[in-house]
Length: 77
View 1 (cartoon, rainbow, N blue to C red):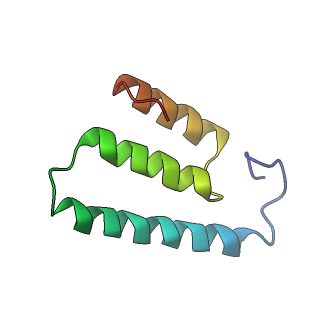
View 2 (spheres, one colour):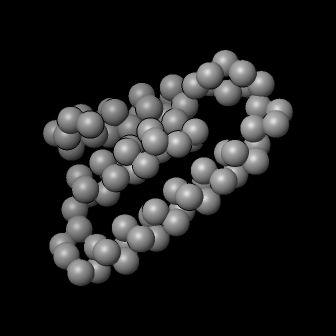
């Protein structure tokens, strides 16, 4: 069961796999780009939140955790 939609995952696993790979690609690009500037923990977690929110990876529990993390870093998504 997908927490974000309430639908069974059957037939959506390939979409999730693609989203996971896209997130990993985005994290790689973020890491490479951060080599050119001074990266911050705030920038990283905001990037992760926005990347996950734009795909099918954000579950209710994950969003709750990431919002808690961002709030602790004094960031508004």
